[in-house]
Image 1: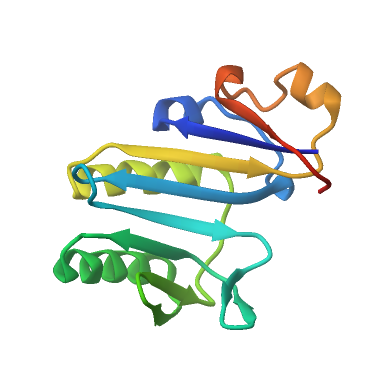
Image 2 (image 1 turned 60 degrees about the vertical axis):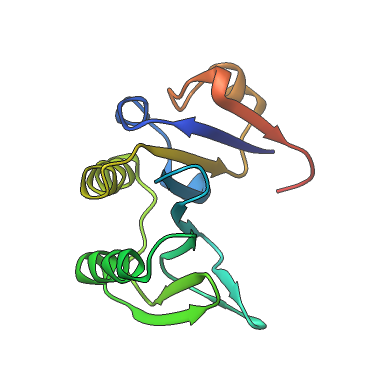
Length: 153
């Protein structure tokens, strides 16, 4: 089964203990106003770009200045590398360093939150979760922030 934890903050993620091979997707969303926000994300199997998936970190943005977009690109590229590809309001860092461990996600969320002076919310989706792992809260994440995703892995 798949399970998503949403609206996690960095201190909650600091307590997490999960196998990284079960992470399917993560996102760090940073609100900068009522409609202004951006999100940095990663998908294990790549993010769709035209007909082929792009592997590496990506981000999307909504109603933020182009200067801020470039600052995000510069920050992510300096830390994780990758070739920059643009698609409307999404930016892909093709071939960038990929990670899904709680410490790396938390560090990036803290850094983004401080740099842009805005709160960061973290979402992590897991695949191939057993009923026991869910029932026993094996990943040590807030059980009230867990959503079961219907369908198969």
